[in-house]
Structure formats: structure tokens, C-alpha cells
Image 1: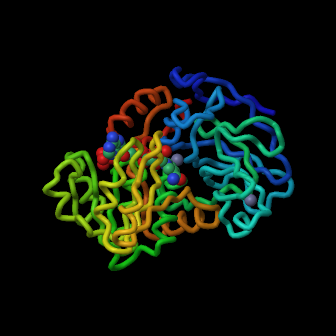
Image 2: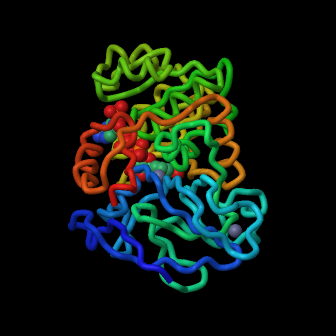
Image 3: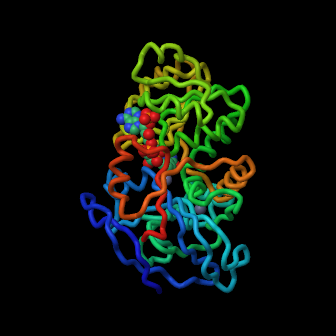
Length: 347
Ligand code: NAP
Ligand code: ZN
Ligand code: ZN
């Protein structure tokens, strides 16, 4: 066991502050990683503030991890000391159910183990995430990272990247697809870049007028300010596919109206409250209202390789870990362009 510095919240109301945690020594199939960068996902904020319920304290969040391998267990084949690697939202699953066998570990029928706030399968406690100096995980849940791209900008691909890539692939978004990306934050800006790279026609749907220039720079072909009904009217019945990344409660029905016949709206954002969607908003126009959770390990590696090939990374603001509480407040105000990433050298 080794003592490792981290940042944790002790209760739903307390700020993030320094905390020392224990990491296990590597088992035969484990990889020990010194963390270089960790992205700040809105899920971290939902979790430390217990907005979804079920948070275990002290809570060390962080699931957009890039680091360097510092030790490997005796049976590890895929990684060597010194390799640059990543860990996303998953650190374990049953590997036996149909979903795991298909590489859909995020839908493990026996429950996946998240990188933080999940029970370990060996009963050793609950998981602690990437706002820490190091982490130990089974090699099956560790990803290869190309050294071609800046590492701080790669970190957010481990959650924001795969969470947007997976539904775009599943629903076969490509040339000719009219895509609306709702919400220009961490997930939204990756959704725009990825959908554009796949050849889709992309419209940014945002409630922040000042993001128009950025949306166009990121590749969006069109920008619609969702509070301006004159602009919104132009896209009623327009989209084949809407990727909803909004973190706060909002009216899904308003956006379902923007779908064309047979259109699909996929929720990846997870607002705290349940919402009502009347059936007639779906049956008129044979619309689908769907959800998607991160991505499995094979698809996450595919996405990382795709991004390396197409030179796609996140737009990041690198912060020192002492500034994480301010970063959370700024995130709540939508004041992030477009992902905070913690430089772990500052811990
Ligand atoms: P983020 O960076 O904070 O972005 C959220 C965006 O939502 C904001 O930039 C803003 O965009 C929009 N927004 C915020 N409040 C709004 C409001 N009141 N009305 C309308 N729009 C609003 O968050 P993120 O890290 O991208 O995460 C987004 C959500 O996805 C979170 O709920 C997170 O937990 C969830 N998530 C889900 C998965 C999954 O597997 N499904 C994975 C990761 C994260 P505009 O200013 O452009 O409107
Ligand atoms: Zn995340
Ligand atoms: Zn499983």
C-alpha cells in the first residue's frame, strides 16, 4: 500500500481540499500510473455535491486521466514502465456478461466499477479518482495514448471524447446527417469537433450568445441561440440527430420539436431532476428519445486512435489543483472554454 496525495470533498457542502489516500500495490495484472493531467468533468461536480445521491465521502473525483506507467504487475503484457497511458470512467467490470464480452463494459449487467465512487469488486472499499498523484488499475482498463498530441488536451477525450464519439458512431452520423449539438461545454465542444470530422452538417444550439464565434471556430456550420425564438423557428423539424449535453434541468420537449421525421435525440447530459416527455411528442414524426453512457474499452481506444489520426483534441484551460473550487463555480456559470484540466505537478 502507498500513501498518495489527493484532493477530496468530505461532505456535499465542503470545498475540495488536500487529503491523503492509500493506493494498493500492483497485483499481477495491475498497472501503476503517475498521473500527469486530469480533466474536470461536470460529473465530478454533480458527484462531489451529491446532486444525484449516493456519493461516498471522502470523495476523490476525476476520470479523465493521462499519466506515465511507474510500475507493472508480473503478468502485465500490454504496458511497460514509462508508457504514456490513459484511464477513463471505468476501472473494472465482470468481463463475463454479454455486454462485457461485446466490449460494452459500461453496460455490464453485473455493474461496472467506475473510476470513482464505485465499490471495488474485491470488497476493498470504494474507488477514488484522478485528482491524485497516482492510480492503480487492471491493465484491461488502461488505454494507450499517442505521443503525437499534447497530453493535457488529450485527457478530456477519456470522458468528454468517448461520451460524444460513441452515440455519433452508434447512430451512424456522417456525411449528410443534420446534427444539432445542444450545450457548448466540455462534452458539447467535443461533439461539434467529432461530428464535423465525420462529415456531418453541425448546428450549435446554445443558450450563451457569446459562444457563437467559438462554435464556428470549432467547426459548427450554424449557431442558434436557444433563447431567441426567431432563430429557433428556423430549425423546427430540421435535425436528424440532436446530441443533448446540457447538465442543468431543461425542457426536452422544446428540443424534440426540432427533430425531423425519424429524428433521434440522445441525452448524454444528466440533469439532476426527472423530466416529463408526453408520448405525442414522439409519436408525431416517429421520433426517438434515447440515452448513451460513455463507451466501452475497445471503442474508447478506437476513439483515441481516431483523434490521434485526425488531430482532434480538447480546447483546455490548464489549472493548478488549488484552483479547483473556483473552476467548479466557473463551470456552473458556463465560463469554461471548454475543459478545465488539472496539472498534477501542482498537487
Ligand atoms: P459543462 O462543461 O458544464 O457543459 C454543460 C453545458 O450545458 C454548458 O456549457 C451550457 O452550454 C449548457 N447549460 C448549462 N446550464 C444550462 C441551462 N440552465 N440551460 C441550458 N443549457 C445549459 O458540462 P460537461 O462536462 O460537458 O457535462 C455535461 C453533462 O453530461 C453533465 O450532466 C455530466 O454529468 C454529463 N455527462 C454524461 C456522461 C455520459 O456518459 N452520458 C459522461 C460525461 C458527462 P451553453 O452555454 O452552450 O448553453
Ligand atoms: Zn465525465
Ligand atoms: Zn459484465
